[in-house]
Figure 1 (cartoon, rainbow, N blue to C red):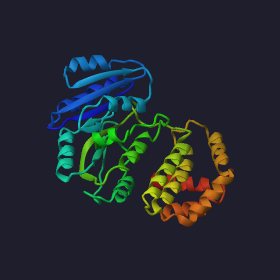
Figure 2 (cartoon, one colour):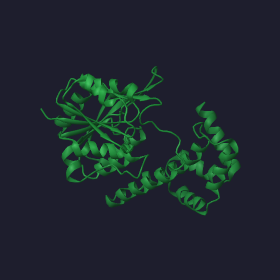
Figure 3 (cartoon, rainbow, N blue to C red):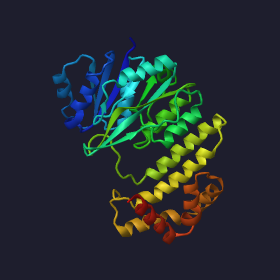
Figure 4 (cartoon, rainbow, N blue to C red):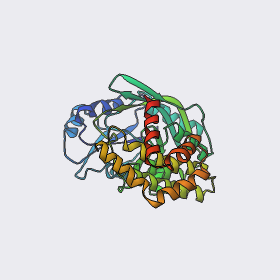
Length: 328
């Protein structure tokens, strides 16, 4: 029976960590090791682990509060044939490991992804699944289909082959505090030939204030733009058609504008308008969007660029308003 190394970074997550650990302890598949890397300010993680008392659990402490560095520490200490990830405020379904390993073994794939349950306020549950893909050697289609269904970026709904990670020295880029998981997955898929998908919600993702959840980040646009450039490089290396890349660049600009007026942006109304003005006053903004207008195939993005984003601040704010009304 092959071993799975599960990497769990934790920072200020004492109140939920026990649940995450126990979701591993009571898995139907028993040959695993759980590497818990506490990073930053030391909490109660070590004491929680001692009370659970399972020699398959290993505790590592590092002073630097950096989730990428913590995950790299986990990779450096992993001894299993497979690699999986778990966030400190989430849980595995009881047969997560069994299903993932069985799928890889039967289908001879090098990456498997599953669906997940997204839990809001401990009550509302949203299930993320995708029916359009199974086992495939078309890695481009796999990537794009999972991206469209919000299933690719994540680490925790996947299982990886440890040998591929080690032989190609795949690690998390500590430069990024956003998108580091997406970048890791991009680096990984460069070296695989076959991937699979399980259309079941085997992972339980908790939306809350603790752990590794997202907050408003002023530098989000720059990070997403750089990540798209990296993705574009892969597409060119593999000689894939570029439609998805053009649409992604358009989406990056779209998100940049929409995010300004989201409630988690702490700026006041005047400051938000100033942020928008700074974006649209840049020469490269209009030049880039004019190029994208010709190449994007996503109808929503094409309309947004042509009739709103290139028409000045008033039309952009109208677009944001209409977008919010539609969602409401």
